[in-house]
Length: 299
Ligand code: SF4
Image (tube, rainbow, N blue to C red; front, side):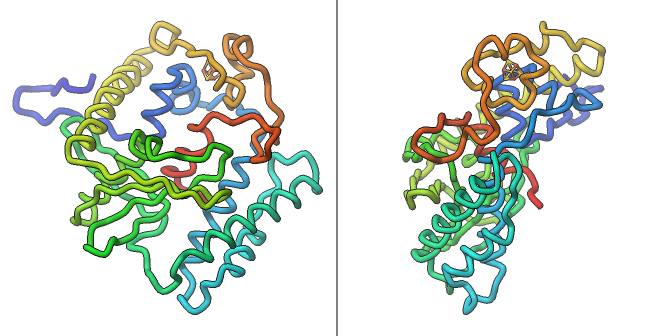
């Protein structure tokens, strides 16, 4: 159990985790078990089209910043979306092509407002920070330098929901990246931004020491619960007393709903392409669409 050293004076064991792991534990302990503990891992449902869009746009933007600045044109960004396109999850080729055209257009319009000569401090940057009980790690989409030299965490969004300043301020993942960026690069970092590619919206939050401390405290509380559950699992306690389901509308988007009667009861199934960012599509669960893109290693 976290917090129990073997002997007096020995350092306590730190729980290593990402924001996605903590959010999965928070949102549904059963899903946490499926995702991180059960081995072999239960088979997932089919891939989601909205995840394919997110992956292609994120990779395209990362590759764009790897180009020499003179080659960083908005059109090149659109080309990179097309080159990295994934057809997984789409109903058919027509739907995939239409989505590819939309996503290429988002990136082209977004990059038209980006100064190609301004180098980010990091792209797909791994950051980490140690707290009293955790080793937090993650991968920020981009880290910029503000005019005063401080760091700015940038996270791309491709879902239907247009992010707000409150979303940026309340994001545990962004706060963890800010703390990790500060520790990893030894520069101040309080500003976090959500860049919504479909609309060009930039949602900004300026953290304070107190607000970052509050997020770290939340992470530590979640980490304590998850670490205890890990230990229980290792001791053979794998049932619902430790890993209860948390059914809700998010179950529509859960990769493991086929293994979960309560989740299937709680929310209707979705087609793999139901989360596409078009006006008549339902909204996927935000955790599925965003944090997994942000702090897991992408190809
Ligand atoms: S279907 Fe719902 S309750 Fe079941 S594991 Fe997934 S998120 Fe949890």
